[in-house]
Image 1: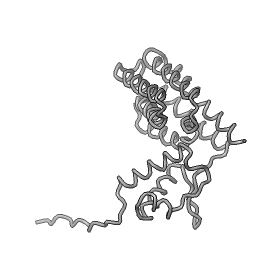
Image 2: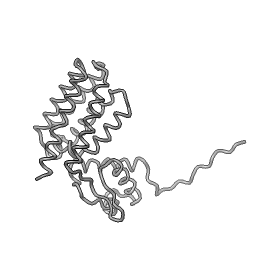
Image 3: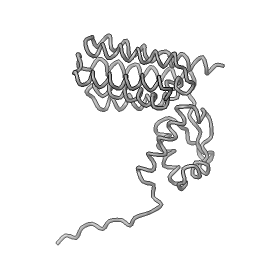
Length: 228
């Protein structure tokens, strides 16, 4: 009789996926909302004390942040929040434009009534959060809106790549929430409404155009602030 494989002994010091994910999300939000600044050092000892975990857990989190392009780990010098030059940011946005255009052109239009209703519902929640001044929740709903729309392209790997590049530029396109720029935030709500209308009864070319135009203000604002 074949004996079942012996399970490895549990290691209470091994970081769990849930622990790493929770800390990862907290630090991502800190970077997105500017609580952690570009080029700011991420000290393992400080973060270990903050999150009440061992430094091995923090190293696992920093590895994930490095992989996502949010931090840079330097041998024997620790990690810092990633800072992109305007030229690098142009290149990142070039890739984002290519990816978003491809996703928009692949989307089956008109979109299903269920998809249109879901996007409208998310954008309505987004509007209410903005009106209530809950900009942290608004930022999350903005991300949810785009993830839902991108998923409708029908290619999970394309949608995943869009999310990866969104994350690399998260501190740029979320700057409006960090600074409380309500004018720009309200503009994004109107732009979402226009994209949903196109998904309901428009063309792929028009959707691609709207999506690319939707990204321009964040990049322009970044360049102005970077040179100050």
